Length: 188
Image 1 (cartoon, rainbow, N blue to C red):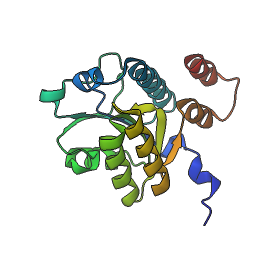
Image 2 (tube, rainbow, N blue to C red):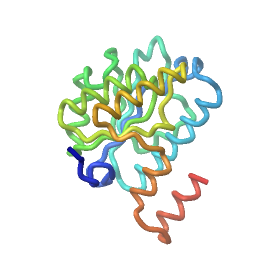
Image 3 (spheres, one colour):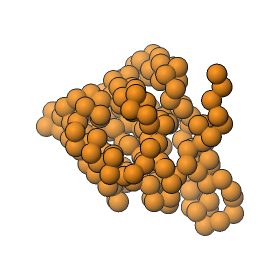
Image 4 (cartoon, rainbow, N blue to C red):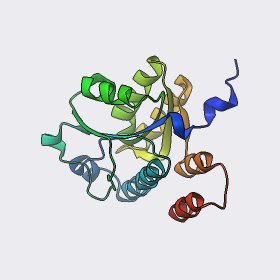
């Protein structure tokens, strides 16, 4: 059965951005170029969330062991910062409550690691009836194979996997306005 095209287009009015576990000690274990790409693209998604007034939720896995969220991320305007012990964000009641209070039913995920926390969160959200998007170039794992296979698994489950730039331009829809000018500068 073919899914409606609307399932593949994020709607800003129904979308929440979830930044998963981009923390100091976890980041130190990532390939340097990959980490730089994830930080850059996550900041683009954060700027887009700000432009479109989308709620932003940030999680930290076992902060005492893995450290705080990277200071390179622009977290101004974050709605909720949740510390968790479960790999899936949905295993943390505070996260589930924060997400429910957004009133949204679509989630855009970015963060690390793709094959653990991002994957488990995406699958749990799908199971709970959410429309889930993952920015493929704003997630990472220590191993490229783990990253790749996890994206394939999520796609098979029904997650929309797409690059950051595609998400930004889908949210924009048109060129020429001030919002377009601000965001298009970031993706160049």
